[in-house]
Length: 191
Image 1 (tube, rainbow, N blue to C red):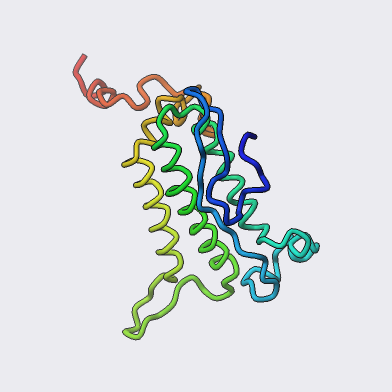
Image 2 (tube, rainbow, N blue to C red):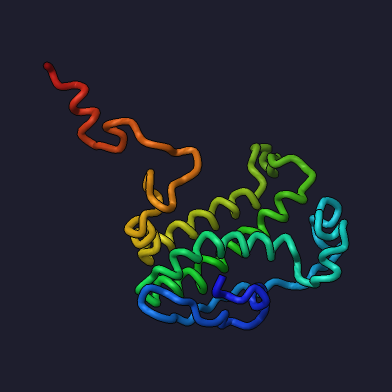
């Protein structure tokens, strides 16, 4: 991996040069991860890293470090193939920080021991606000990816397509007519 793992999660914005199809491009990302705060963390009782002492040795929150490393692994092939530095910047400075926000919200949801539903002052049932926040962040991620051209670029690079290098898990060869807008019309035509 051309991006130094030691720079992930640190305050250093620039992660170094990434070899792309157009040459070397500087990759930057605001992915700062705070130190593990032990028993102050909402996940400390169930955290596999805190329980085994790993977080005390590594300092930064290992749950967030793993989550962000996993997200970077998803985007790294696009970063390396991107001829457009704005795609690289969008991924590093916009999309990855949104995934970091999502990780923190997911940690809070995971740690919450109450019901995900509650009754408001008016007696109406409502969903826990963190679930709404989670959905909003996911929506913003997809909106940024779509509006910035990351989704279009990923599709052109073969992602999101059956048989492409980024084939989605569980989706194999599609049936004839799958995704064809005229398929349903053809079914209703009289023979």
